[in-house]
Amino acid sequence: MFVGGEFYYDQSWATRQRTTLFDGMHFLNGGQACLKVIGDVLLAQGIDKVLLPAYLCPTIVNAFERNEITCDFYQVNHNLSVNLDDVVQKIEGYRVFYFINYFGFPPSLSVRYFIQNLQSHGVLVIEDNAQAGLMKNPIGDFVFNSMRKLVPYDGGYLSTKFDITPVLKKYEGRVNHRLPLIRDYRKRLYDYLYNDKDDRATLSEILLQAEKFYESDGVVLGDEEEKNAIEHLDWDGIRQIRRENYSYLLKLIQTIPEIKPIYPVLPDDIMPMGMPVYLKSVDRDRVLESLGESGIGLLVHWSEMLQHPATQKNVQALDMMNHMLTLNIDQRTSQKQLEYMTVKLAGAVAEG
Image (cartoon, rainbow, N blue to C red):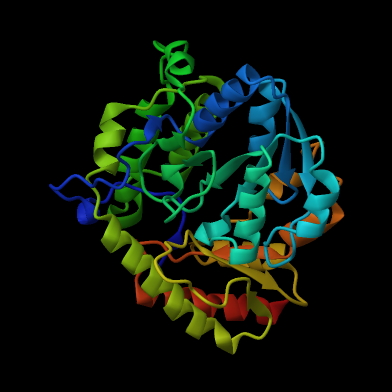
């Protein structure tokens, strides 16, 4: 049995009816493309620095630095909430504040009011929904997501009050070398997992090349075929199964005292990307390796922080990353797979 891993094509969630959830948003190539456009808009406003959360994917920093935008960081609490005291100390002189709806979970009302108060004082807000897809009642002046974290399709939706048409025009005509590779990978991965075809080494090489092109191509405009596929998915059904899986897994892991979910309560309406947990008194990397040997492909958000010059010195954020693991609850996952993952997780924790 396997759990998690990269997404493969699955027609289970395809519908004939097009969703209107993304109406009014710009469809771009992905989260990196959204950040590139946001950076261009900021520079056009004479803004060349941004205040980011210390716990984040370093590719966010890379995206801004490529636009010659300087990054500084505010602390994030261990429960992934914004450390308001630290923001207050650092926000002076910054015209842009960036926050992340980690794993699809929204900020508390007090944090939300704080962010809106920043806006009332002229601070622009970037709301990162890369792990959330769509959030109800977004508050950012820029709101974007990354669909490949939720489904087997490339693309990211950006919403903003600014006219980005002139920005988009300069990116017309760029060739997307990634798409043929990632489409081939997603098709062959299904056969590998379910029909015992292909080999893992070949698939891993295809994925590696696809990821390299995602970084190097600099494609900004989204692909219409990917957009059409995304907008013909049963998003209500996907949200519902993710919520059911999350709730069921919360009950299962209660028997493992070393596992502490960061979000023990599931708010109404949200669509969780995964279940982030802290591991207490055990070696997270050993647990991860043991689970991998059992066919369970889980994620660490974000191990790249250890290598990036801008993030490798933040002791608190690195401590959070080093003890955190994201358990899989996505729409591909059955209750039987959740039970299998929990049994193997308990065994791995017991081994230390």
